[in-house]
Image 1 (cartoon, rainbow, N blue to C red):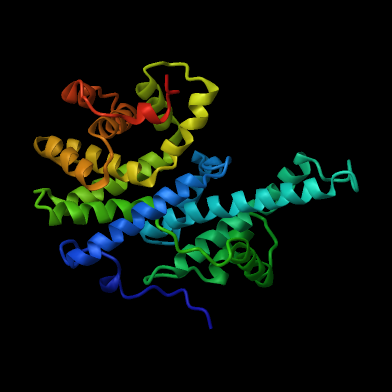
Image 2 (tube, rainbow, N blue to C red):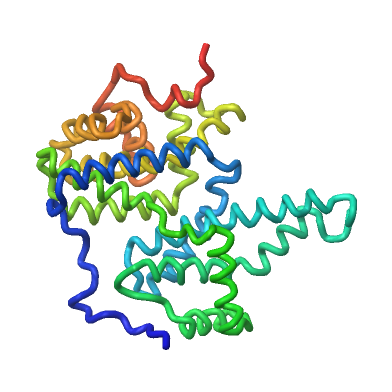
Length: 327
């Protein structure tokens, strides 16, 4: 029988515990995440990020809050929906291409694919939140709760249809649903910084990083548009530059590093330059790229230009070289 009763509040997640992991495990995990990130970037689908638009992310965040899900679950749900929807669109377009000619004009146009996606989108979104919640040790969204929510939106799905929807997501992703989210990268890098002796207020910094990560998810396009223009020093990027910038937008390690850098700048500015140096040594991401990301985030948060002035002309390779055509 399904249960939706959460654990005793005293047993609920109070946040990560830092400085409690053996250095060998930290090193192995860091290598694994870096490899996973690089592999993902090397195989980026053209539609990457398309299903992370603000209204979708906001829907998932609000529903996760309504259901009292923990921080990691909402990020997992966003990434799960993104991966599933891209795969589903690819499969539909492939099927449409294979049947083109046999059934031309019989519902195989892109508009029919779009309509098909729209008809089940909220159901799939709820299923992704349910699956993400099952990866958490603290709380799992029951079928009754999900069904009640869908009914409140005037959908008439049955429990069987909800189960079939979860299975459709699992089958489409070949049951590979437990993937690392940007929060995983942030928390691991905070652990490494602590192990390396970087004196930072870890608990409040972690909380601030989560808030900044929420902000980056919700204002993704604005932040990355600012970052692109800063990197190329031009307010009108070309189509080629925009296309090449997709790897920057999808880089979870860069996002995590930028979030931590921004958090330190806000919370403990005296440690900022040292932290950037540590992050550069840990990840290989240049201080200039870290600086540019912090500038983009702070510009969107408070309109600040301080980091850009603060670190001036950093004579290292930046994210610009990932975007600009080589002469």
